[in-house]
Image (tube, rainbow, N blue to C red; front, top):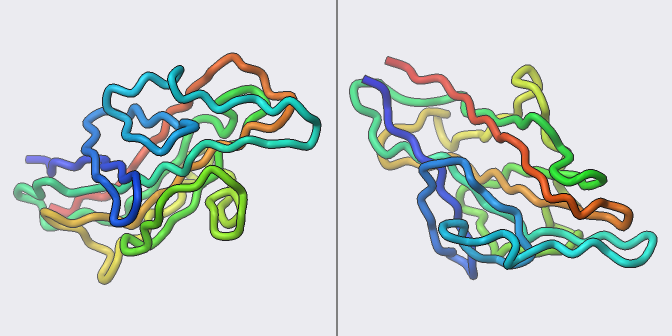
Length: 176
């Protein structure tokens, strides 16, 4: 039987509020709020009104969690990629992997330490997939978390206000 895995979002002041996600609906918003039951139109990222300005979503901290390993030995080699880095025309999606013990309250800026300042543009193919490095021996079993994948959207002047979405894929190896 296959292991049961979940995506968990952490938000708010440290140590953070953890929210379990069963579906991949992870909105990038202008507020640091959970994702369950949130209407993205209530927390829009405004398009800047002046050339050279950029507005940012709050960082979104995501972890891979093994709820039940079942008959498998462990899960490892967890990676992610998307099918687009441009959720909204003109925007850029940034990502950073942070240690599972490094959660800090999310920010909506590009200051030092933020995902935009320290991260990179996300990969768009499985061949380019970025590892969400797993601590210690690289293997996760029941009740264990991966490191954080932190996403942040940059919306510069000239972006269009057409909304948008992208698929985020998580792939991993399950060792029986």
